[in-house]
Length: 243
Image (cartoon, rainbow, N blue to C red; front, side, top):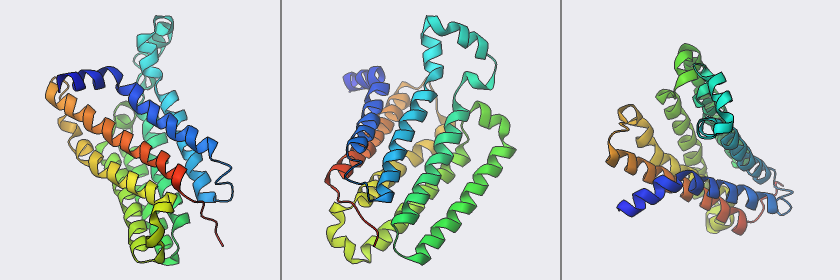
């Protein structure tokens, strides 16, 4: 256990970044396969987008560890840009919420379910924006638990709607060929695992080694599971062409 904890602590960023890049590269190589599948292409572009925001969002770590960039660190010190909470709140928390909602509204067959997803998404995104406005100072310097929970709730909702439609359709017999199934499964499991961690984030104690280790292990394996599922899904699935 001690070796695993040390290994994860030493290689955490490399491990999760590797699976993110793997999924994106797989998607790029398979773009021709999905050239007539609009939803799949949207998903591949999302994977590229995630890698871009992760790369840009890593700037605090770079300027704090690279002596050649200390001048940037000094320049940004005591400003909201010294940390990257604001960046991930805008690009990931809202960005991923919008993506999953748009993606599943495209793959759903029922017009009624599409409408429900769009309305629920509009309400929850509006609540997120209102929270950003009223908690602007927190938004610029730290993550906001309520906004993260809304994001998790929205993703869980749209994936659940997809599963309900899948179970009640003939497509259930060939679910293993559908990219949407792999995306929904990966995102749903990720959310189920991440929600308790985000909920108890306020009780996070960096001095509690056991909690830090558990938190890192759970987050890492949930991330790796999600992106590996995405990669497998892209490889084994068949394009879904709208008729």
